Image (tube, rainbow, N blue to C red; front, side):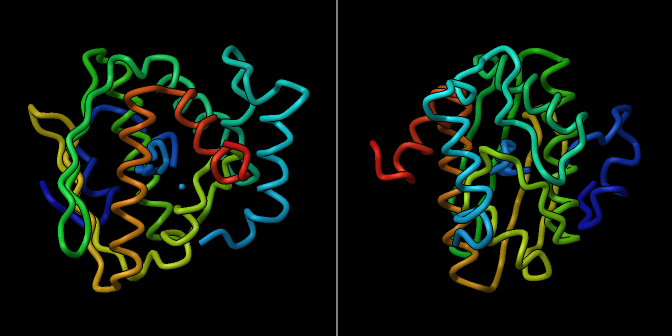
Length: 206
């Protein structure tokens, strides 16, 4: 079932590929998964604003931080499903010399559908260098969206979960994969709390 084209890879899966990640991603990420580029400026300021005194970054109901300049409402909605149900998600990560192998699953079928759709969509976006610019998005993802042509991705849905192998001949990209995979695992473990912690750390406030 392995294929570098996510559209073909998931042609036989009865879910809609509604969102772009890891997150992210991984991702995911992805969650969509975290090189800053444009996000250090405009988008970085947005993220700090929503996380700051107005409290929007802590709105666990509406989750405004899951919106993006180039993301669809469906993409943001699927991210919300995963964050609200992060306690149903488990992950295994193997760091390879040139990339990563991850196995991600959810005990909830609806969350699993959102997860598979998100991963497929995000990998498709990386291949097209089409950054969704999610407000809370980890800056590590900038590296992926700028270098999608240097990344090879294989996706397979098995009884274990969704298995993703991503590799690159560029050592810096492989290192970014390791970092992002750890970030996604943190989000799977602690949900939005992990995002807040990473944002505060990047802002030098934590």
